[in-house]
Length: 286
Image (cartoon, rainbow, N blue to C red; front, top):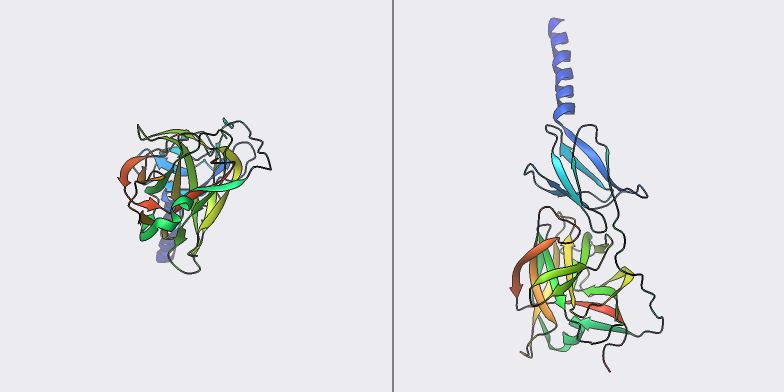
């Protein structure tokens, strides 16, 4: 009988210990409409490995400590908070749209810039793997001197490794200074998440709003959100051996913490061209 009671006490103690030192689930949500925010980046100040919330805005943390975290997501203000066992939901405040609402003339013609201009002389050579520690980014030049050109969608040769497999990516667009190699204004002020499958063709990612094309060009950045799924982007070289003015391909590494203006820093520039382009509205040549 004594052994029986001893066994019950041990089980209860183990259960309580698991509650105290186990993992707690927290939801990250929009402070305005209370909806979950998918794939927000959570950075732990105590050195614990950073993580992303899942598609339902949830993430887990170890209850052995009350860590200080920084949470960042495109379209929302960065927030720093100390977690506790009483924390259930963390609300992020949306950033007011700093770009003027654009009314696009429906009569504007649609064009493609970037990879579209080099298809005939393009030789695919290798694939670059996108993961959560690296952004794959491609600079696309604005060769036009016109102001009324608007980005409608992003085109890319990007796929998952296995047939039938689907993965999530986030696209970032930045105005970019090619002289200083520094990012300027973030152009996408939404959490722009898209699904990638295993198809081999070019994929088109439609943007929620039409964005004016900066005269300095655009840096198109791809971030992997599902680490268990391998995502690849196709690269190549220009067979004509002409100087490539449309593309500068970079590898980007995520900074800690990620904030709303600077999500990564330059690591490497290559001579290869990423199969990436933009669909734009407006006349790009005479």
